Each structure stands twice: as C-alpha cells, then as structure tokens.
Length: 490
Image 1: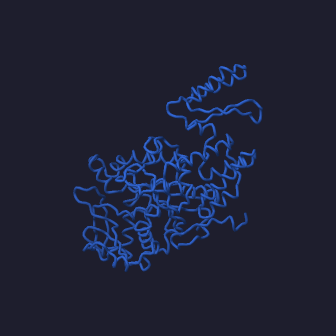
Image 2: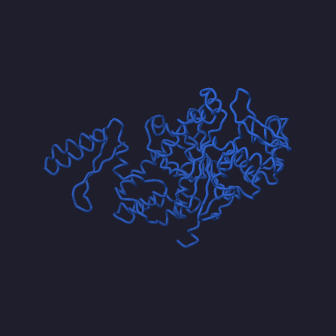
Image 3: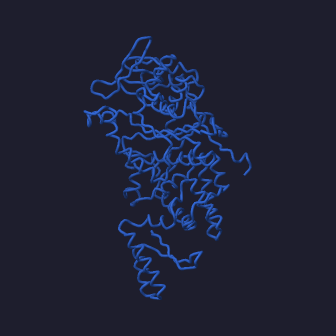
C-alpha cells in the first residue's frame, strides 16, 4: 500500500464526515469508551461496543505500538438502583464499600464475559465511585469539575441540585445537531420550576435522609454549600476521562444511543469546566442491535445476556463459543444496525470452522496482510476485512503456506483464531463427552492402525462417529507420519 493508503480514516460523528485520523501525540494515542452499568449482567447490546472498540484498540496498537496507546473503559457503579440496594443490603458499610459489595458479582461476570469474547483488557478501567469526591492523587473528580463549572458561570444551584446552564454554552448541541430553541419549542413536559432552561441537566442531586449519598462541598456565589447527594450520570465520564487522558484526547466511543443526551452533555461539561475547544477530537458510535428482527427488551421476551449465550441454552437451544459471538458482531459494519439471530451465529460458526481447518495448528506470525489491514483502516471496515480473510482461506486450502500464516495473523487483528485447530474443535465438544477419554481413544486408534488391527480401529472410529465426533486422518508435513484430527459434527 502507498503511504496515503496507510492512513486510518474514521467517520467522525462530530463532523458527520470520514476523516484521516491524526492523533494529538503519536506516542500516546488516547481513547475512551463508555463501559457498562454493573447493575445486571451485560446484554448483547453491551457486547457490541466492547467488541468494536477492542478491534480499534488492536488496530491502533498495530499502527502505533502497544506501549503508545491508552484505552480507558469505565465501570459505572453510581446508579440510583445500585445505591439503593447498597444502602438496603449493607447499611453498616461506608457507601463505596457497600456499592462494591453489590456490584462485585456483576462486574466480575462482565470481565469473564468479555474475556470469552476475545477482548483485550483496557489499559485502565476506572470505577465511577472512585472519582466522586476529591482524590489524594489530584486526579480529576466529579465534585471538583462541578465546582469549576460553577466558578466559570456554567452551573447554578437550585432546590438541592447543581445544574448545568445550557444557554451558557454558545454551541451546545454540536454533536447531536440539536438546537436549544428546538428543545424549548418541542418540549413534551413542563419544565421543572427550578430549572432556568428546559435543556438544563443535573450535575449533582440532593439525597433524602433515606437515600444514599456523598457529602459534597461547593462554593456558590461566595457562600459555602454542602449537599449530601450523588452525581448526575454525565459528569462521571467527564471526570474519569480527564483523570487518565487529559482535558482533550483523541477518540471517544460508545453506542449510537449515547449521542444525546450523554455524550452531548459530556462535551458541554468537559469543555466548559476546562475552557477547551474540544473534549475528544473524534467521536465514534456503533449502531443498534436487534434480536431476531425485533428491538431487544425484557417485555418482548428476547432480552439476551452475554452470559446466557455462553453458558445456557436459551438462544437457539445451545451454548455458543465466545468467538462465534464476536465474529457474528463483526460481520456487520459497526455503524450499521445488526439483527442478532441464531442464523447469524450458525453462519459465523461455519466460517470459523472453515478458517480453523485452513490454518490448522499454525502459530501466529507477524505477517502484515495488506488487504485485511487496508479494510480496517477504512473506518474499521470489518466486513471488508472478513472478505479478505475468506480469500486467504481459499488460497490456504490450495496449499499456500504464506496464505495460511497470513490468515492466522490477519484474523488475530480482529481478535479471531486465537486457538489452534485442535483446541477450537475440542472446545466445542458437547458437555457429556469426556475430552480426555476422546483423546485417549483417538490415540488408541492410531496405535491400532500401526499394528494393522483395522477392525478394532474401525470400531473406535464408528463409536466416536455415533457420539458426533468425526475423525480426519492426514500426514504430518514434516515427518510424514499419520496423524488424526477431529471435530464435532452438528
């Protein structure tokens, strides 16, 4: 590829254009992505941004070097439902400790789920509860950011709340392209009487005596004001991104549903608190996820968690490997809506079976495969990258060793083919098949074939076939000896 072809191009929601990515500092490329609220197990809608931005993380590391990319994905554990449960279940603990007790199970499950999806750990994973009050290390926190907004004339106190004054920011609405006048004219409900403007949003909300909260101190109009309360949703990400990436950074990502109000209000808070022209230079948003053609919801009965797909038989009557879920997501361009279905999972699994057969047990090589990388450089075009992998698979099937290694290396850039062929098919053995026993029988059959005891060898083969295990004999390319690989037949 030419030098121009090596440029990463990103569709920037802020400008509604595809732009060449130019990091503020190539030695420290910085990305922030909104993570899960750990009140419940993560659903497949949560899985999509985790997978999409994991691919971007891998690509940035490939382009700039592993040590030159900082990826921050937060854990949101400040939520009224979480807070209420913490107060109810752990009344004797300090609030942060009680919240940690409530969210420990769901946070751990999230980590297990995304690991099964083949996602790398982010560089930093801050928890919102650790950034509410001023910190000993001086990193940005929510209360201090709110005070800065008050000092700069962008926030005001009213009826136990600190609110952001949207009219104080001349270009508020730049990300979503919503104008304040339109919000006023189209307001569906009466404006709270303590708000100056319909679009003003909460930065800090007072807690009642029965509600959990933090003691926050502010100075408003020169007077001290202590409000026992909790932060608004949007201020959390402004604090955590500033804490680790600075006042202005490169990429901010998340789902399409976060453009307004969450990301719009993040921008407003961060720019006005720091006095900067930008919060993030590039804004990326993935499309919505439907399930079998319908919007996912508990009332529709099609609410599917990552845990359900990996560990239960609720979707399609079986458990699905994490790599199948990952490929199923990547088969649709990240900005397009995706219809998540059993059929799509079956298609992804079939593709992976073919790729694994093509690469065998080849080690991951450091080969740069231009077609795959070129596709990803074009606004993370994973569908184009997958097409390139299909072409490599076809060449590998014809005996091309270079294509085989390139297929393995290129797939790794997408977070795929992380196992050997043997490991992949072994992982798909049904729960009632004992893998150790299976391997013993495969080895025993090879011994019988060497001894020319063909009837007994055939008996073992037929026995395994009846259990859904197909054997495939081949010659070791180096020694010429007979080898056997196996796979589970559906």
